[in-house]
Amino acid sequence: MADFILKMANETDDAGADRMFGSPNVWDDFDWPVATDKYGNESDMMFLCQVNCSSIKNEHLPNDGILYFFYDALNCPSTPNIKDAARVILYTGDRSSLSPMRLVDENGNDISPDAYMMIPAEQGSVSILPPDDDLSDDELYEDPDGEYEDEEAEVGAYDDDSIVLAAFSEFEDENVSFNFENGSCLYFLISRKALENGDLSDIRVFVA
Image 1 (cartoon, rainbow, N blue to C red):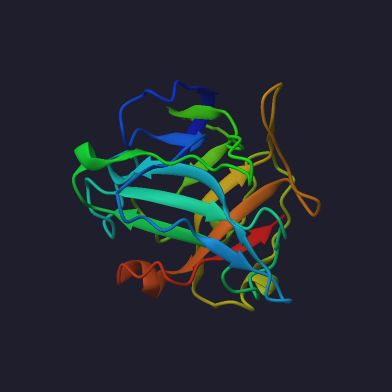
Image 2 (cartoon, one colour):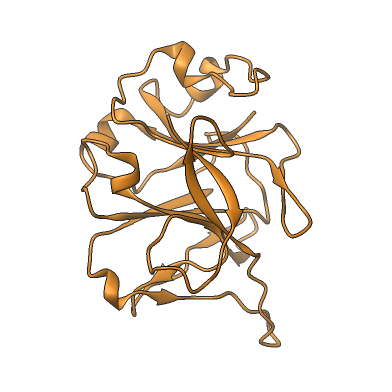
């Protein structure tokens, strides 16, 4: 996997730089992803990270695009049988037109968490799909901390050909707390066929 560790970032970093939390650098007509619960209530998804495709070097993604990861952190779905629990958006336009978009509450107060730089590392809190996506089952379901049990049967409820697009481990310091009730890692899943076709419309999640 392409692994990253996190380090406190400055929001004035280059537009489109690899970053977790904080504010995504987006284009003028960007629509913030919204989650809808079973009662029809809508809420803004949480921005997790933006990462350059050049940092991942996957043959099914453009070399100069940016991937944006969002998650329904209010309802915290944790199984792949729930649709629209997360969104992944690919941007391939001009980076010079990007600017930070911050979330605010009804009183206009900034509610975006602090931003963190994503720095390439041998092992880290964030893992993105590697150049060779032809992974074995052991690699697909391996937890870097050695605590993740093989849950292939549950993941298969979504798609027998699903693979891990990204994995976000629990992270906590004096500024940000990011954790899960049912496990220690949030996995973004995509079917291999969809990835090969450049189709990011059906992303599932799994917490373990």
